[in-house]
Image 1 (cartoon, rainbow, N blue to C red):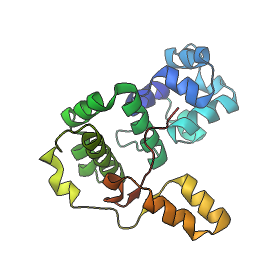
Image 2: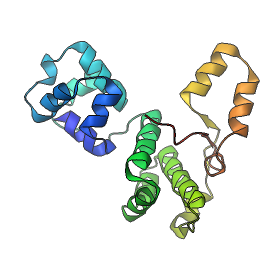
Image 3: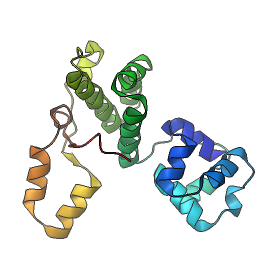
Image 4: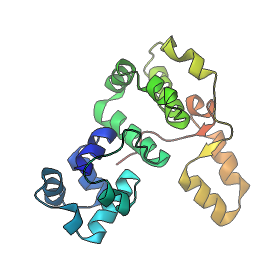
Length: 193
């Protein structure tokens, strides 16, 4: 069932999916256990679940049996899931799990550079604030950065609505150093619900 696969790939609990989507926990459990069929769910329910995973309703229904090995969620979803993993695991366990599973290198080798650099920035940031030494296994990746700055969708919407350059400049000025080094403009990784 695709929802179970997505939950596993995103390292998300059913509870978190329920909270983020606004879909009742009993409904999520019914979908995941196969008691409720996706094809018979209300369109609103499917939309809410798809939105959390950064996929379309059509892709949920079309891929209901199996998710392709090269599935890639939206970068905003990846960032959110990473921040939630930090919150759920705690700084040290997040660092340990990420390094033990060599997730940074795996993402980089798949040429998923934004995700790889974001994860490396998160590990470096958490290492700094916890007074831990930086893992040197990724020094080759640390010499890379995105071609142009990546701003969150919230920043881009605000800028597009107002045209105020201060929004962009303030975002860059307030960015966490470990992220801006890779041209990722990120200022908040703790305030997730």
